[in-house]
Image (cartoon, rainbow over the protein chains, first blue to last red):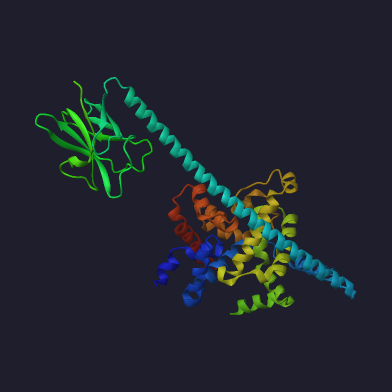
Length: 263
Length: 177
């Protein structure tokens, strides 16, 4: 440590003033013990400050010391000397302590109970808030879907059930201009494990299928409405059941629904 | 160290140690109180309170946190400032003149002859106006570096070194005496 620089920084003056933080004070106290030159410096600073402030006092303050000592003596004499106390006082004291302890324990218990209840309530609140947010999102989505269906530019193509699933039904809402197709898959059965519905755009002459997407979120979507991009000049749409990940060409044995765009 | 021993004895309730401490610090403490209060009678009252506190609370002094003088200094400043702010004192002292310790001589608050006017004058003569203000704030009134810098409108980073220069002037003066 460069003690010369340390001393020149002026920090020791502030140390004597008491203008530093607790941590700084402790550090300087340590250095002061280690380096005699720092200690000497601090003592000299202290001396000049004591001298400076001392010039503002009268030469003799002896009479005040006497006054202080009188006050001290009076105060120590004022401390009452206790007479021997009867034992019942001690017993009541103990009894009171026990009662107090029990009381404290009960209060402590009550307090933890209240804390637990408060926590539970907080958690429930959070859950409710999440539910409300979910519901709001759901409502938003439903509104959007309603708008989609009401849009006069939207082409509606019903897809009828085919041999593989005669009961199945689906519909495509196609916004030709914006290249968006909405698939209403409410009438399709839940796909079996490991399988997924694939949507195809069809050209009729010759029959050319082009995949426009998979309904891989089928199970998790309650509305069963799916938005897909379709920039094709589609003449029809078909839905097949394919292994997870989809296929390059449709598996015709598992063609569920099919419909033609009416021109 | 001799001083450490003195403080240990004080904590043990040794009256001789207390008298020695009174001898060492009472004039300085009185000066600090008087620089803030500017009233002899009230200063004497506070001085007594400060020493009663030193006697009763000596064991709460922690040498790791600083000098014994600094501990006393804090007690003194706090007691004086508390008094200064008290309502009864405010009412009785509507016209305290002067702001800095160095004004004592000019303000007429001090009855000349009761204080060491020559000694004080010597110190004041060698200090410039900035030094008087700095020492007044940092030492007598216990301002922080930040508060002093703001009050004097000087950069915070210069407070430490400027103040050191001021103290050095005082020390040179003491040696030359």
